[in-house]
Length: 508
Image (cartoon, rainbow, N blue to C red; front, side, top):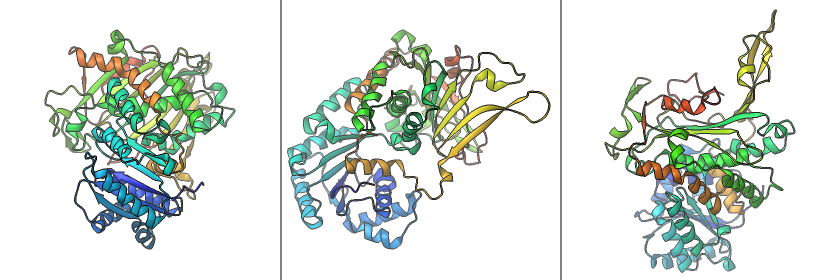
């Protein structure tokens, strides 16, 4: 593995949950594997008044509680934490950035981080352009004095207009090659393995087109509700929160053409072509191609679950969707006529994200009671949890006759007991440190995704007669979403039939 150059990582909004639960545990995991720079420092920045010692203690607690797939070494944790300090400032005040610059110069002198800075914006989106602009005013974007990179979390805008505005503001302060828009879904090992599975195996790539694939469905389900973030979520919804970014990025990797190399720009150029090829959904077709729902009160595994409109911070008359399902097409030579189905929602039976490739059935069913011949083979790419890949195909049952049974050929990453499976943030932070932007969203792809969902947003915002269907918490969303499959004569795959009591176990 490439060792990153010496650098300081500055986390804006460091007193928040993301730093505590994800970022610092991910950095410790990199330290544990000797994948951080030889000289590095992590500076937490926020408005909250905290001492260095109190911040370090909180981060140690986060490491112990949320580290994934890492053997904790207390001596090593104490060594790691000495590289972390805290800086209190008003992130909206330009004058404060001169103080920050002085603090960074002191760290640079003491730690020999060579004027290389990675700025991570774990803040409300309203501060993205403010922080970027103020960093530029303080000359902290100047690449003549070392590496300067900026990581921002989603949402990258709330619609096409705000997405364009945010990109314009960011580009006034940083060049596009300095900006890393993080999408933690793309950091999942199985998402990345899509590229290897497709382009390293002669048995898959010849079949990966309209001639052999009937349709593709992508599901991202969450068992949790809004978890105390009702005020935020009510201004967002499933379309903005999940579909426009996470799911469309996965669509891009699933449907892209082979890149000329594994260089970041070559890969992102191909996913961008997919975004450009998305067949626009006309406003008059929104009602038939996009189904939205909202969870209602229910009892799930003995627990009483409130409906979405009963959650704290949510408008009692809210029309914000907690579930969305969509049917669309990709207008290019490879995928012409192949429908894509994507869905995402909260308060579904379990947490699961997967891509399901449905191959066309055999041209003639010569066996009796053969469901696999009628419905076609399936390739299931499980992104989370229990990451892995499964192929469903038919074999003869032992005995007389030709009774066909569906069997599974599967692979689970958990079976590689001697291999560390990195968390998404662990992988993505490391990539940013070495300057690999392959798994980060580019400005033009973000804008193309917003352009694709713009007609849906317009119709939902302007037409009060557009239906939003209720679905009981703990179910697979509104039944109306099944109508999207009328042409296919099939329906959604319902994974995780054998749920544990906590609803978190989901076998392939």
